[in-house]
Length: 83
Image: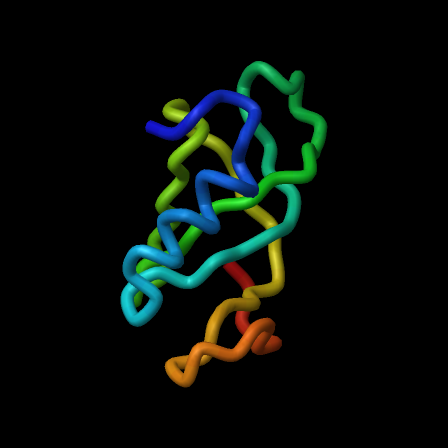
């Protein structure tokens, strides 16, 4: 797990370590401790579309439009899929 309350930093670090495997995502997530309210959050998704959250260890619902690095290293690359 990454540092608490550092979701953007934690997720960027993971995506930079394995840019061809993980896609960085920003959006909103709902977590148990947030009383059902959406919170600005960042996480990664793997090639199968599974959420990889390096900050929160409990279940959550995630809502986002994907963006990430291209294989050529460019940033950002808009995505059209919803996580």
